[in-house]
Length: 248
Image 1 (cartoon, rainbow, N blue to C red):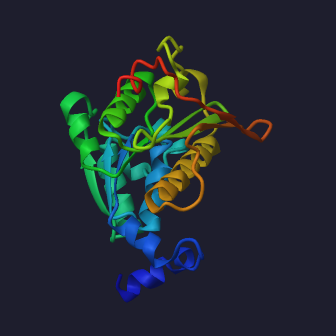
Image 2: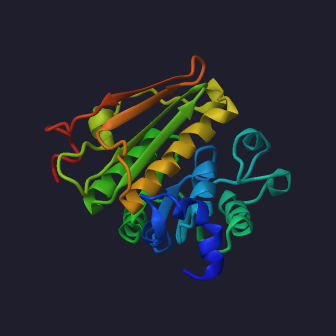
């Protein structure tokens, strides 16, 4: 690290369990973020601010006026632009140290697997089960850590899945049969701060996984009810009959 980086990241380097060693790990890390919307915004901003070296952001959508209530990567002037382009500009202004690779596409199949193979960690900030199942399966196959988050109305959840560690459950152990009813913000609404809360926790968990500090949510599901401000965790166990991770 050069002197400017030491100053930029000094407040987290001061933490006894962090130090320059953990900062070096962040500076050389490569993270894939699936989604540049409500969850992807705080995730990308906090990881860039913390000094993650490379962020690969994938999202096929363009910025819409209705996004601006909660998707803080984008502003009024970005309406109609690709979200990943808006995200890249916002993050470059926040921290020029972080390289942002913008992919305006819905990663699927071989393209998804190739991107996951090339990173240290994946963050699922998507908004549909089809993408979550595909990302989970690819992470299990590649044995890459996955930080999963979801938010709707005034509720949210976060979990960490570590197929690189023995006995870690995967996303399909939690949502086993794939019959869940899809719920969207457009149909059910969402209060802006809940995506900030969930995305911030996702970024915290990602930093912990990348640096090896603290205890992550691996094996636990964090549930947030912002209406009552009730936060609790449930234990997750690996399903021996899981159609995804049992095969690996």
